[in-house]
Length: 71
Image (cartoon, rainbow, N blue to C red):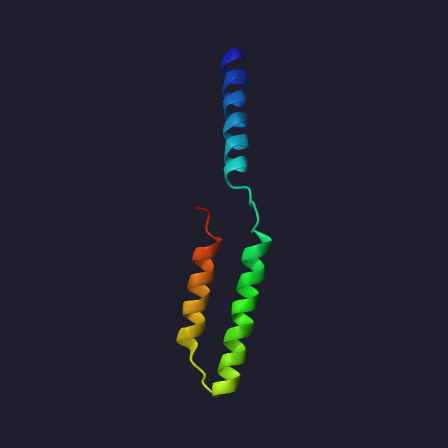
């Protein structure tokens, strides 16, 4: 029975470690605000110039994605 309790304790510790490492930490409010501001600026620019280019939006999404990665 001692081996069983030891194994169950090990499994419980592993589950706690996995839960702690996969917990979402959230994004900084500044990054969220900057992402929104860049999107609004890009939309305004595209409206003013009558351009519609999906590549620019994908590029903006990639830039904002890199801004939000922990570093």
